[in-house]
Length: 101
Image (cartoon, rainbow, N blue to C red; front, side, top):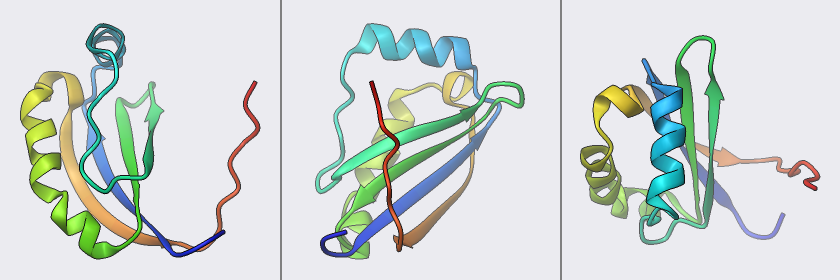
């Protein structure tokens, strides 16, 4: 892996997976916060929990995007996205993306 990468992981519970999928389909591509290099959402549909993983080059870039993440939270109703239970920052020390068709 070239350079250091950091992941901001926001955890949610009470996610309405059906409404989240509908919103994703109708809203098109989501605007990524400044400095965000990529991201993914992990979902446990049975429990209604999800994690939004956003990748950045530095902890400072994550801090600089904080207001944009809050704005995203304001744009997606809580009854859809669920309640944010935590936000954690990790250095990515190993990364091997799965093969995709």
